[in-house]
Every structure is written in C-alpha cells, then in structure tokens.
Image 1 (cartoon, rainbow, N blue to C red):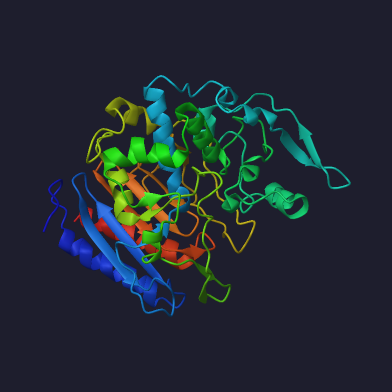
Image 2: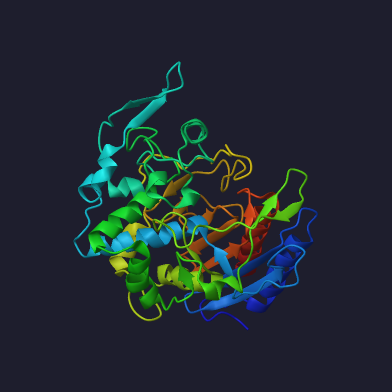
Length: 401
C-alpha cells in the first residue's frame, strides 16, 4: 500500500513505526502504552498502539483510547481565534483588554522584596491577542518558571490544572512583547474567544471547529463514554520506574482552559492536523480560509526566539526543548523549526507538544503530519520523547527512500 500523495510506502513505515512503539513499551524505562498516527492530506497512512492503558493492568491500549491532550489543545484555541479574525470581530493587534477587561488588572512582577512580598508595577502596555497566541504576552507556568513556582508555594497561586479563574489571575513576568515565554497566554486567548462568541470555549469548539472537522470524541469534560477507554496517567520516577497516578483534570472545569483542557482521541486530532494540511478545509466543511492558514503559519514572533523549557517542578517537567541548538520561532498556532531538523522534518514545518508527553508535527510542504500520545509525567520523558523522535526519523527515512 502506498500513499496517494507521494508514493510513500506505508507498509515499510508501518513496520518501522510498530517497532518504535513496541520498543517504547519494552524499554528499561518503559511507557505503559502509547498510540501513534501519521496522516497525509487524504487520511491516516499509519495507526498504531502498543502496551496497556494502565501499567500492570489487563486492558490493552487501543487507537480509539482517550487521552488528556494537555497543550496540544492550544492550536485548536488559536484556530477559534483565527475564525474571529476572519469575521472581522477580533483585531490581533488591539489590546486584549478591550475583549477581556480583567486582563487590565494584572501587573508585572519584578521579583520579591526583603520580606518576600511580590514587587508589582503596571505594565508598559497591555498584551495583544497576537502576543497571547505567540507566548510573548508575559505569562508563564509554575512548572517552567521560578517566580510562578514561588507564588504558588508562598502565596497560594493556584495551579492551572485546577481549571479555575483564579489560576489565570497571575502577574506578568515582563512587559508584553519583550520575549517568548511559554505559559497561560493561550488560556487568555481562549477567554478572548469566549467573550466575543458569548459562549463557553467548549461550545465554540463544538460549533465552529469540531463540526466542520467531523470531530465528536473531544471535550473539556471527561465524559462517561470516555472513561471506559481512558489512557491513564503515570509518574516517572528518578530510577526510571513508572507508577499509575490516578490523576484526572477537573470535570466539568470551572473554566474551559484553552491552553490544556481537552480530552480526546488521537484519531480525532488527526482530523485537525489534516485541516492544516488542506489549507483550512475539514471533512465536513471549511474551518479557515486558505489565506488565513497561509498567514497564520508564518513567523509572528519576529526576532524573538523560542527557548528551552526549564523544568522547575521536577515531578511535572524535565528541562525540555525541541531540536536544541537550532533556531525556532512561533506562528499563531504552532512552533516553527527554522532549520532542517535532525529527524528530517523540513525547515518551516510546524509542531508542538502536551505536558503528559504528547507530540505532533505538521509538514505542509510534504503533506504529512503525525501525533505521538502517552500519559506520563514529567514532561520531556526520555523514553517517550526519544521514541517520538525515532518515529519521526523513521517517517522521513521512509519518505526519502
């Protein structure tokens, strides 16, 4: 069997991909189970699963299992924002406070005084929605930033996984536009979408994104029909062992967090990836105009650089970075690798990840994209991340053969 697009030999790649998945399960520091898929512009050319939903359990993981998608949610939020741009309802470069006034209540934190109190000041400007989407607005995460971690520990700043409005009301780490810093920026962009639509983000997704994509198995709520096929979360310990965590995101959440809150299947996410390969066209209708897609996938970060994510809370993240030493920028929904990656991913391709070691890429030049899903903390797991890199490498090796 070959792909209709380029003559890509799916049988050769399928054997290699199956071997990569199985090697992740068989590793000395194993994953419990994982799902991987690759698509061309027409449909999936590979679907694979290996291992168990829960380490030590009986249930085999399947390609139809549900995952907490974490930050792979972000690109869907960006898509909903881009639809509003198309409709003339959202100006990316106006202060986002015009849409979400409470953003104007937030100040910049310049450290702590001698008594441990935050030193706060007014920002030089309010963040724009473009800055929210490109992670240059000034927000962070406590597991990637020492200041936020200290606010959480000493001042009770709630974690984003609580899915509360209070978790969003954090100070800015710097004046908007100064640098790239990964954090709750896209959660705020989700609030912009909610205000302009007059609906919760989950409702917006269902109506405006999921319906034209033909997506049904994706939700901010851990639905009862998801529970019977839920891939369970696991914790990696320093010695490499893995244990189940019995962790779930709040359901229903107080706030639909556009940065991390979705549950869904890998197969459903592939429909979203295909839309970006097909210039905005979904299976059941158009999601974005071709000119919007072309605009959105350009570098919107300017001369700022995407940098390493430092693992501040070891139980949640290791130090992590795609393609260390190579230049990376940010489109509106995705990271852009500016150089040919070691895996073979071409310069200008798109991708990102989710906290529980979920990874994807979108190669519009060649017309392919892929997704690797596990449920392991901390982020940057050597086995899961390493095997994902192996999968991508095998893909480009097959594509070039």
